[in-house]
Length: 151
Image (cartoon, rainbow, N blue to C red; front, side):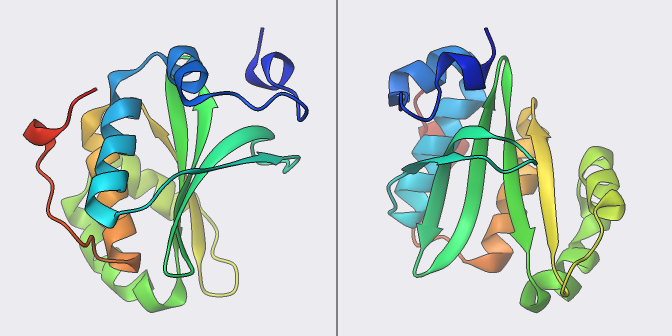
């Protein structure tokens, strides 16, 4: 059963149900990281958006979107918005990031001076790239090392 069928708009999933559906250790690491580094709590929301309909998890800090997470069986998609203010720095950073991240960035069309990057998080390297892009938008309040994170 796919995500939208398992959890329709009338049935909000719990944190545990989301983690079990995704079944990927990077999910827990990312959520712990965001909550500790940015001192934020996740917000659950249901979307009918054509990009990725269903329940998702959003993180915001000081009125800015950090990212939106979309559960997929075995992995998750992380939407990272690179705004006008961050675009030049993101372009400068691209050669230092993975080939996958560079491809997503190049293939994503800019709209109103920003790019909405839909990154499939299947490997730690991609997750780290995504977090570097999030940090351009808003610097983390606390420094958290991957070794400190528990699943």
